[in-house]
Length: 141
Ligand code: HEC
Image (tube, rainbow, N blue to C red; front, side, top):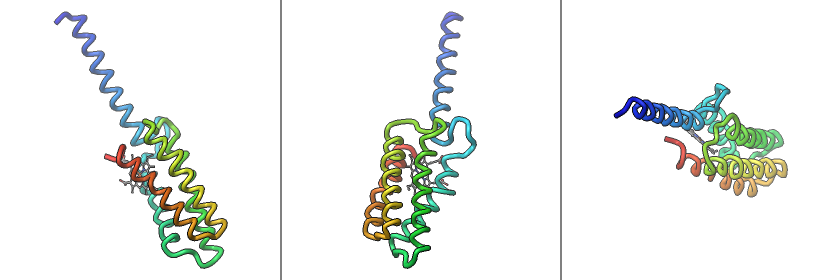
């Protein structure tokens, strides 16, 4: 192999490695901020999703309970934006799960909590949690 050809192969190999690590970084972490996807999931999304589930399984009995449900769903709604920022989103599956299914579902939970409508909250929760499975199937290793 000529030196020039060898040089070209080396450059291509380096570019492939770089492209691979950039793709990984987009899923596991944003480009410039420090929050890891794993931390966002475990520290915010899972905690608030569990809180919504609890409230859907046994509907709030007072004003404070409905407000807490709205808070949890609103935080999940905000997380749907964070998932799309800082170059974290790698593809259309991710984008659909975060910016449509999770965002619209959590917004519907907020609306149901404001209306104190437990049936609507349950239905919206079912829609919202389709986002978890859809994204994990494609991107959670
Ligand atoms: C747009 C994509 C996406 C959506 C939507 C999503 N997740 Fe995740 N989730 C991930 C990825 C990617 C990982 C793996 C992160 C890693 O290990 O680096 C993950 C990991 C997790 C983990 C494991 C965290 C850990 O400590 O290892 C939990 C728990 C979790 N998600 C819960 C949820 C729940 C609950 C929902 C729905 C309300 C949800 N996720 C929605 C992408 C998503």
